[in-house]
Picture: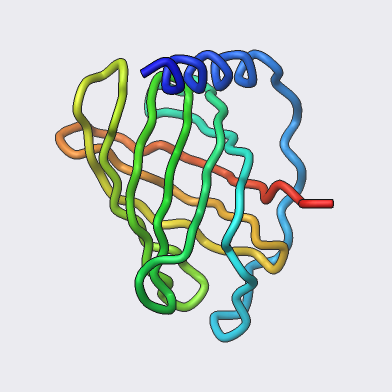
Length: 140
């Protein structure tokens, strides 16, 4: 529980450090998608127009083209799965910890040649989309 509180506070701090997002690369060819495994910085806008930030972690799933995903965003922690469909990562998610209570939803991200992700997520039972852009954290 202390770790989740720390992570939520860290995400809130990162959200306060706003900057202009970098320009995205071209969309990846469906037959030449870059490796998605790793950590990403998220810039998002919720359905009310409020901006938020966080981190996204993508790990290998049980089979090729399947992934385990975790979002640490302002106000919550979500986990889910993703399936690669050409150059689109289709996701399903649910909250582990959230100021809004238990939530779940789906979404899809287009993948760029630089392994950036951009797309929308929905929340079950709510109108509107969350728009997210995810930038890979390069390892030295």
